[in-house]
Image (cartoon, rainbow, N blue to C red; front, side, top):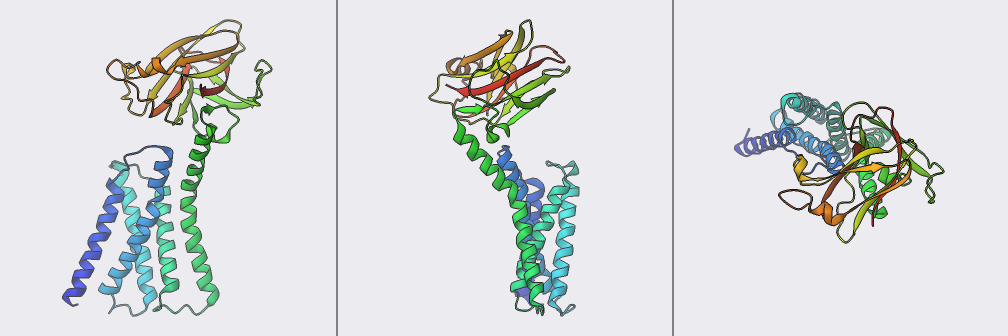
Length: 319
């Protein structure tokens, strides 16, 4: 082996180790659902590139041992798959969680990049034309499949942005993707007759018996500047009034009670419209102002344990 070949081989090995280490250690600084999917999808091109690097290493180190080019593709496939398996095993006690889906994304990257490479590699003689087509189709579909969640969530965010200043009205498919519950059950049902506007669906929330049961809107459209208030409608079929707590926070919220907007409201029997001024929300923290250009979440929950309580929510929006 010449010095030049040795230097190139060592460089390829360093690149492989660096890219695998990046998968193990690096996390994107954003934790939105879209960026989580982008980070997940990143396994595919990273391990695809690693597989090509391993292919180059195998060709240089084992070129005199294996004369057939396809053997080196097999070596690249097996070695890179083992690296992917190792990277997930190493994350059991690491900064990220081990995930079988990440390993499958690794495999998809290996198959897609090696598959395209073998189809254009002049050193490989694929005698059957159909075989080349099958390999290329599998390779392309493997890559596309891992990118579908990114495309889906990109579309969801675009839909969320298009319906603003409505944050959630339970009619829009996009808005519902950001709705969750805590110790409560949510159903999308037809609006009770008590709601007189033209909506057709509302969120029926049945509160559980554990702490802080309720509804949460995660990742609403973040820029609330230019509006006066945030409001929502709640219909109570109860004969007596109930109390709800509302918590609104920005993306810089540190988890402390004093670092967010907190308010308890009285919900009477029948239809209620609850509103909060954005000026009050902005000045709510004790040591800073809430950033109305970077809002993070809305939580609406029972002020106490109200197992079995059912309320109907609609038209969470800015005005």
